[in-house]
Length: 337
Image (cartoon, one colour):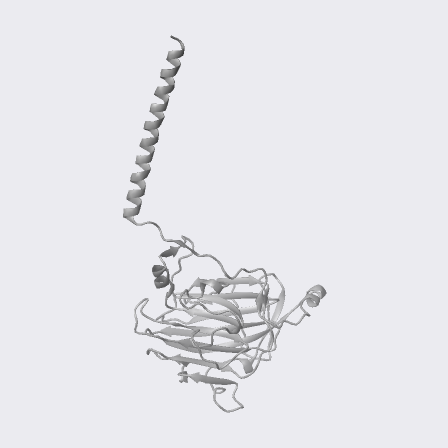
């Protein structure tokens, strides 16, 4: 697995390569980054970051929510981002007293048009405009499918926590009961709760391609999570992070968020293709409404009676066939006598 090595100085660039071999240089953009000692957070107009809701700053992290019920919090950049190509490295931690599947609800990383607007989507507004990357820690969909008497297809069942990405255009809602399945671009399982080592999410947007990787095993290696071409994100949106708890809870901590500007070498044809201004987020050739469950199978009693009636029907068909054959044989004999 390729390791992505970042320099800590904003004025020094390091060469790297995209997944399709294009050479790039990356620069840390401090004005869009958030790290210890968190001096750029506050309500003053000179601050680069602003807290919302129950979020609070400690010496070691920005705690988006404490491990308490019915909390939501967020931190948002005050500066709109006008970069063509960028990558975001997010260092986070999710932990709490709840046992597996008795914790919730999760956190989100945003590149969105709207900011500081609380709501039900991991602490942010629904029908958002932009990119949301969600670390979902509670499987709401299991109860929904049970109530609808439906079940997963063999390839669609997921293990939580789970990371998914969604592109919103201001009219698409996040389906909380289905854990965002109808509108997800894709995702991967990520066992990130109550780990002793660091956990990271890597989000790269370059040449209209969205790539997400995770480093959660303590091996300092990125693991592929999602890779989608044809993603169109406008410039001038805001970076942020949010989290939400309900009846179940967790500590959702943001330790750092580092944004790197990518300088990508493009051909003349690529430059001409990307000159068109993107006004609304979209994804090329992606059907967001994917079927992912089937009708629930029959009960044991239904299967028994179905098999019984099938056998009776088969037996009756055999009897009728024998009677018809017997009459046909008898009629043939009469023709010869």
